[in-house]
Length: 306
Image (cartoon, rainbow, N blue to C red; front, side, top):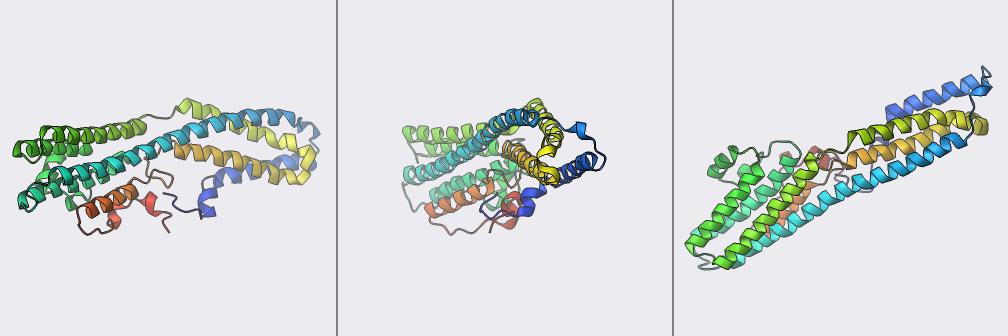
């Protein structure tokens, strides 16, 4: 995740380096044809690429907004996950306060909180298409690990275990019926958040829309040297390259933002958020907190952490 303002230049322009090299060579070729071989008729009115550039600017702006909306929705959902994780821990701590020195009850509460931490990490790994059980043995018992291994959707299995334990708490008299309902509502909100994340993950941005914009952009870049050759001379090479690079960067930005769970530096920082949740929940349980192991931190989120 891009956590700082100091983004390396090689990362920014590394995304379009091959396109820029091709455009530079193309602009030089047009300039040589015009000045060395006197192909004067290849020049076209500047208004032609200007009109096309205006249309493409509107399309790219619309696409960038749609891509950012998807990214922001993902971040908003994970903000709700943070709140509901804290709420679940608070409810477990306050509702199940009977016989506080009872070792069985203390272990029971700790099991639910640890499972919630595991759920946050598992959900992030599940959304990114990696092993959703990786590192979960730190918070889950072997019995729980064996249980969720039989499920395709590991986070859903962990929520099912939450529901089972809430029923156990009710049967054991640790919570009353009203408290059980409130706990179930919190778990339901977590389930809803997972479903919303999966909807974003599984809903593909329309490929035809992206293809049409990309082809229009290539047409604009192809016409641009012929429109600027009469006005800039040899400086047309730098002007075409710079203008094209700006349009290409905007397009790349939209492409990266539209998929917030693809394990890229522009992703929603789900592992970092899960680590913050772990810290908060451990402190609420009055337990020591240790930073997540490097194996749990994705390559995308460790890329620019400074």
